[in-house]
Image 1 (tube, one colour):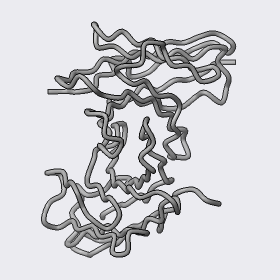
Image 2 (image 1 turned 60 degrees about the vertical axis):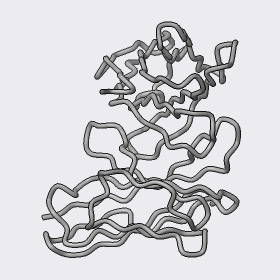
Image 3 (image 1 turned 90 degrees about the vertical axis):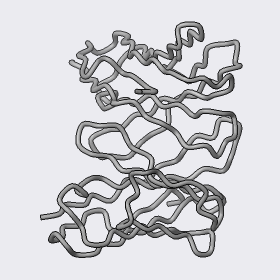
Length: 116
Length: 114
């Protein structure tokens, strides 16, 4: 069964507007971590934001915020004030268990294209 | 540059040949991961080291694949008797075991098997 599901294969967004990327997950663990990564055309995976399952506040990092809805097993990424450089693939990932060394499981990704 | 580095960045080989990829993690990171990514897909976990110990291997890692991290620093991933289905981007990542445990990725090694 898919543990991480990203249902939007691709999205267009107008420059300076906000965009929400969907991510749902499936786990039986009580303790887990959720991550978002950006992969530009150069190929490198860039860490954006992290949310722990016990964190009560939604994570924010600059223009990135994570809309964490635990009961719905949802961890959507919101990018505010989109920039042309935000055009990339975006991956949601989960670490099951809170041991920091545990591997990440990735979703299939969402391609974002920012239009000027 | 103190990031994760991978070598070679691109490798083209003929089916049946052996290939080896090298990964140099961020120096203070004790954990090292290998992932494989095919076009249009998310990265898939292959294996994970803590220091020199290989702690987990995915079932994706067939007998033709072997990974080592002999001194707990750099790592190698070898693929023997390559097949066309091995064509992919091989990503290396490292981490230091912070609370969040985010992985820092290299730029990957792209393998094309003809």
